[in-house]
Each structure stands twice: as structure tokens, then as C-alpha cells.
Amino acid sequence: MKKTHLIGREKEVALLEKLLHTEESELVSVIGRRRVGKTFLIQHVYHQQLAFEITGIQHASLKEQLENFSIALQLFAKTTLPVETPKSWLDAFRLLILYLEQLNASEKKVVFFDEMPWLSTHRSGFLKAFGFFWNSWAVKNNVIVVICGSAASWMIRKVVHNKGGLFNRITKRIYLFPFTLYETELYLRHKGIKFNRHQITALYMVLGGIPHYLKEVQNGESVAQNIDRICFTPSSMLYDEFEQLYPSLFDHAENHQAIVRALSSKQSGLTRSEIITLTKLSNGGGVSTILEELTHSGFIGQYPAFGHAKRATRYRLTDEYSLFYLKFIEPLKKEGAGTWVNFQSTPSYKSWSGYAFESVCLKHIAEIKKALGIAGVFARSSSYYQKGNQDTEGFQIDLLIDRDDRVINLCEIKWSNTEFIISKSYAADLRRKVALFQHHSGTKKQVFLTFLSTYGILPNEHSANLVDKSIVLDDLFEK
Image (cartoon, rainbow, N blue to C red; front, side, top):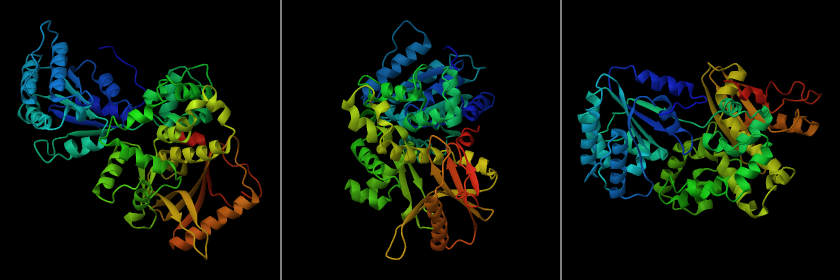
């Protein structure tokens, strides 16, 4: 297999390479949302050691999956004769063991099961047979078995937390997340694309850090032109990706999409009870399961409310593409070429970009902490939402960092094309927000007002003695 070039993923690569030099077998689970680069990572690191690889087929029957297995085994065994299709998964793993035992025993081998949830069809016996393979043979033969799946919640429930033959058998877990802004910049530079950081972030706010989406970006086009081509052209990848993405991961995906649609309508996020009200889904365990599945798969985020019970936890749509699709692609599909170039001067764009930039910042908490000089201080990140009443007005805080050194950073987040100007009225709003937070929370900690913006604040009489720390876009690109 040809060696591929990999951007970022330094920690994951280091871990996987280290396993090649251990003296025991390893069962590695790699979990992450669809198109995040899980397969690419494994094939890159283990391209020389890969002894067998099979990828599950979506919506295939047991018979089709077993035929898929026989084809994969024939390809890796390099035999010109067809491999007989096994009668069951137990039979399939027996054949796999026979094949692996013929290979050089002195070299550590890698066996890779990609899209494992698709292999494990209903009542197929796959997991029991896989448990037999691991417990009776693999664990004794110094091999690396990698299991991978985009349906993250399935992987966690069925494999990581398996109560049967795979109980507590996972030796290493890798949760593969989308690229950070830093990794996105590296990736685009590798492609010869030299956008500035404002433009990279604008692109990130649409495509997220999903490598398979970023692969579609072309040199010689502006960000707006790229988005037009990738998202609004009928033949493009992201024109209807939303309708395919969720059904490929979840059963009864219409319920998952209903929750995602509900979350896209509320920038401050929704509580579980508000989600049920908006979607009209049954108030049972099903909603909790769907929320868990969407969270583990990286589409939504859970944000605990500062100082409140669990029921006050708010859910936000954090998948950039899904939000962009629902806000713009779906309603503007018929507009044709130039849609996004022409739309950037509208109020809807300003509203969306502010929310999208907030989501980007919430995914870069480690970089924000580093910019604050508190990388080594334990801190909890949360939101703050206070409903208004007859006596006081309501308000919300975009990001709150509650630190163990008895300091709380109240973070105000703003997306702009230039240095942000704090007006007299906005300065008064910020002071009122800090005072209201101190009143409602009852905190005795020091409160610092922190400003996160693209190019910082333009110093003037209204910003003086108001903002304690300004964090700029460059800070979010730190490694």
C-alpha cells in the first residue's frame, strides 16, 4: 500500500506507532464522526503491517457481509482462487485465523475492521464471533486489532461498554475529532492554498474541520467562491449531504434530524424539555438515547449551566455543516451560482456568522486557556443563561470559564472584519451583564471580562478599564 501524507494527528500517530513495539496484543477502538479521517489514519500508520482489512457495507444482509468478508480475505491472501463464502461469522473468523497463522509470526500484524456497526447486522452473531476471535486467538498472538465506526454511540454501547465476551477488552481508545483551526491551516497549506486566518475561519464556520469536506477546497478561488461551488452546486458533495449523513449513522434518523433542526433554530441552545416541546417527540428514554448518539457522534454539544442542576444543561448544534445547511443551503438551493457571494451582505449572514464563530471558539477551549495563561489550571467551561422577569432583564453569557484559582472569565465573543469598536451603549450593556451575573450567581470569585474577537478591540474611552483580557483569532490557531 502506498504511503499517504497525513496532516496533524500527532498524538494519535504516536500512540498507534508505539503499539507496534509492545509485546502483547492490542485491541484498539477508533471512534469519530463520519468523514473525519479514521480510515485514513489507520491506513497511513499501519500501511506496512496491515494483514487484513474489511469495511462493513451499509444496509447489507448477513449473507452480503459474509460475501464481503470472503472477497477481502481473497485479496489479502493474494490467491487467484475464490475463497468460499463462510456460513456464519464464527466460520469467517476460523478462516481468518487460518490465514493469519500462515504469515510471518515474528512480525506484528494489524487486523482492521472498519465501519464495524455495519458488519454487525441484527442477529448476525458478529459480536459474539468477534469476541471468540479476540479471546481465543488474537490476544495470544501479539497482533493489533483495530475496530472503527462512525456510529460513535453504537461503538461505545456495544463494544467499549460490552458486558459479554468483549467486557473490558479494549486496550486503547482513540476519539478522533475534526481538525482544529491550526490543523486546518496546515492542511490547506499542504494543498497550496494560502488563505489568511480570517478566511480560514470563515471556511471553517461552514465546513468545520472535516478533512473530507476540506479536500474539496480549490486554489485560485476565494472562500465565498469555494463555498458556492461545494455547497450550492447540485452535483457537489455538500448540496444534499445532510439528507444522507444522518441515515448513514442512525436508525430512525428522522428523529435525529428533527432534534438537529430544532437546535438550529435557537442560538442559545435548548434544554431537554425544550427540545421535546419543539420536536413533539415522546418524553421517554428514546430522546435521551438520541441526544447521547448525537453527542457521541460529534453533531451536538452538551453545555452545563453554571451553578444549576443537570436539567438546566443546554444542547447546542455544533456541527458546522449541519447548521449551514439548514440556515442557507436548504432554503437557497434554487438560487443557483453566486448564491453565497451575494448573500454575505445580508442581516441573516451577520446573525449566522456570530453564532458560528461562537461554536468555533467553544471547540478551542484549550487554546483559549493557553491565551489566558491558565493552561495548567483546572477550569470548567459552561454557558450562562438567565431568563428575565418583571424586575430584571434576561441575559446570556457566550462562554464562562470557572477556574480553580478563584477567578471566573466571562467571555464575550464577536466576529468582525476589523478591530471591534465598543460603543458607549455596548460598554454599558457589558457592565450591566457582569453586575447581573454577580448578582444572580452569588459568586465570591474574581470576575474578569474577556473579549474574544477576530482582530481585537480598537482602544477608546469606552473599552478602557472594561475588558480585562482580549483574545484574538491568532490565539485560536496556536498548536
